[in-house]
Image 1 (cartoon, one colour):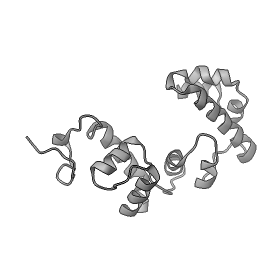
Image 2: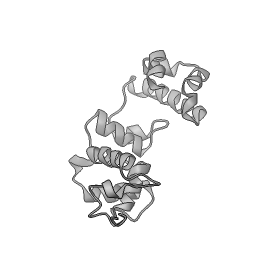
Image 3: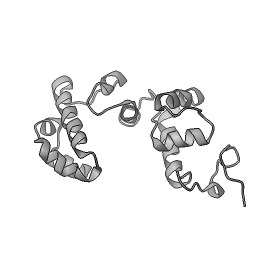
Image 4: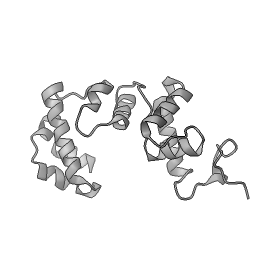
Length: 162
């Protein structure tokens, strides 16, 4: 749906001026589309009004925008700007951090702090990509493939080999 949305509204200014119903129709399949449409158009308006249509490059400015929290700000900073300000913590990363014994917390901010203390700053963006990949393909939430896992030997949650 993203290519369709950006084809119809190719700039922050176009999206800021978009009728909310048009945005809702384009993103309906994503779930919670009304709230998301409100955040998307609010974000576009804020970008146009406060940043000349350019996405800011600091954590403080990003998290002040509608619909952007630490996770999304870390994604933007790490991938768009090459800045390692923090570690993205999504559901995969939270699950793996706990399973691997890297945290005892279930709060994303506390998990992020724990991971930041364990890994070198210049690896934080790639760490998130690798953990997400691992969580999707090997360490599945319901049925982890411990017998295929390269980390099974050091993982406190690994199932014993059969």
